[in-house]
Length: 326
Image 1 (spheres, rainbow, N blue to C red):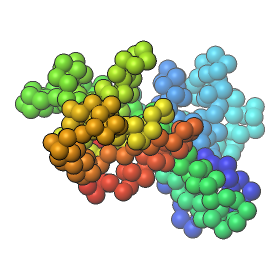
Image 2 (image 1 turned 180 degrees about the horizontal axis):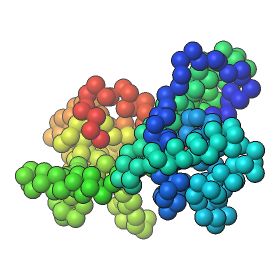
Image 3 (image 1 turned 180 degrees about the vertical axis):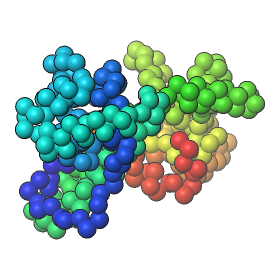
């Protein structure tokens, strides 16, 4: 999963790594009796996801036969393993027949695939932990490189889990049904409201994992619109928000926030042409904004990794102040 420690000696583990031997056998048995399932399994499990070497060899043979458009059954698999000199090492044809006798139906196959995947990720995490310890002792590897590789590795684990977890239709539609019932009973938006009623009616609020793109020609008010949404969400939900600005400086954004909240024009704020009432409003607004978990970053040339690290830092520092739902 990571590159910075390929030259390091491996630590011998005293405990067996997490595995699901029965699930692996049941999946392989299903594939031997129902080759159509292989098209699905291949998308979610790679060869390394199987813990035992003989299971990896059988699974790899199944993939090879499928790629060569050869019918899959005990006979063809045994023949292919024999040609590669592997039939004896996997337990012979008797072991293949035993797998067939243990085969499961498709509904259970999904659960077994998820179990195999979970054990695989746990093994990778354990190995990464040992590799991290070793790398920390190597002084000629920069700390930034170690942390960057670690961050990328853990992100890969997270994305792999999200992209490969599958659920059968019964569970999927049941989840949707209960979600619909909950929305009816609550009679509220399911996501974070932006403060703009028409927009919220269309989106039902901003949902988890949403990617929302606000586009428009220059000087059409995109930044002002975004700032309004940010302030509305922070005031209502008290959730921390990190605002990245690639064009405007932090000071320019603050002036916009003050102008919007105090109804004092940006020109008057910058010119200092303010009345006593203006000053009173400004002081009140500044005090209120100072209590909000709003963070502005105007660093230029940010990389995706830089953004991710900054977000994680904010989450770590602020998690005690919010419920962690978003």
